[in-house]
Image (tube, rainbow, N blue to C red):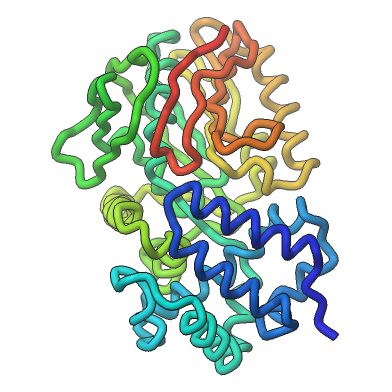
Length: 355
């Protein structure tokens, strides 16, 4: 008999609550409908079978609940599920039983397709996270007074490689960038204004273990499918950033993150070399994380005032939290410091540098 384990059940509950907290009550409704079917040993329990041997941390790391959520949204975006589309935004919130019946029917009718979609993890490229990355970069530039060589790991589609080509409104803290940019980033800002001086970029490169090529229609649609269906502003930003990435030819390379960091990240005279990433660190194997940390520490020892090295990250703190930490290590001085706490999707920044 198909087993919908306690770990899977807890993961669906946690993800539903997370969707509500982060402004997507509709996604929570879909997850609850899938969970109700799975609890009865239905088709969504069958779809979750590849994850039934994982503990709660493993299920969450695999983002198992988000996989069928993305598949259903992809059907809607492709125009292949008109009955489901009538239950999706921007239409009024549907009757939960009607929603459940339709998503169960679709999963039964298209089971092999759904099963194939779920084999790959969700790919997101949340452009609004640059709202906190930006002041991290401007802080590095202000403290080193040098141009930046930027390298992003877990770059997904490479949309945030273009962070300096976006326009930002940081609440009362100020604005930065080209006001005519097609990508407009804004959010709530708490705390003192960050340094917002000019930044010169000499290199922009990124890598991902499975990069998304936004020039490919199917890959671009999959990226859009993992935007929660009732968050239209996120979709608008994503599509604008995809168009900009295509226009600028700023596309990521396919590579293992540790191999790539070891091959490319080392101090260079006359520029500041920057490694950065956002909400991807925990998805890598421990051995990969250890190799990257060891390489950066070694390269930090080789850094000098005229050849600095920086590591900028936006990642979850070790303890459970609804906010992420923006952290910076800048060699040759070294020393990890937290610059801000931020909303996971970049909607709010509490700028409170430590150290």
